[in-house]
Image 1 (tube, helix red, strand yellow):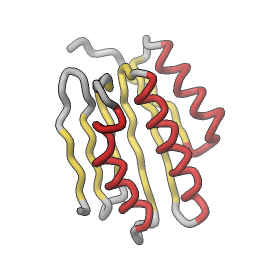
Image 2 (tube, helix red, strand yellow):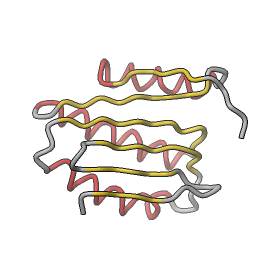
Image 3 (cartoon, helix red, strand yellow):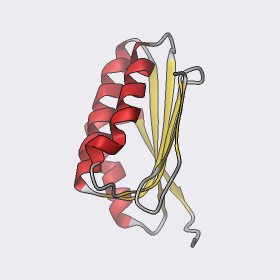
Length: 128
């Protein structure tokens, strides 16, 4: 399956991915009842991406809030992507509302953990 798509709900994020383009986007809130179960199809798709011939992977994360279980899944994904840097170009954009200090701090934590693979991107707050 070269494309992945999971629609956003009030408790789960939009997740899009393209193996052909080497793109991953996760946008929204992530508070699933069972994070492992929710993210399992995405994890399976990620494994396909990891072994694909794709030479460049660009990740866009714009998560406005997430629970602890989601945090572990995101960290595991980022650490797996970091290992791929031996053979692939990998970049991650961590986007956050300019007034969301908690998400900005989380982005800084990811930069500390993963270095120049992660870029922080502040964006103007737009109420929904």
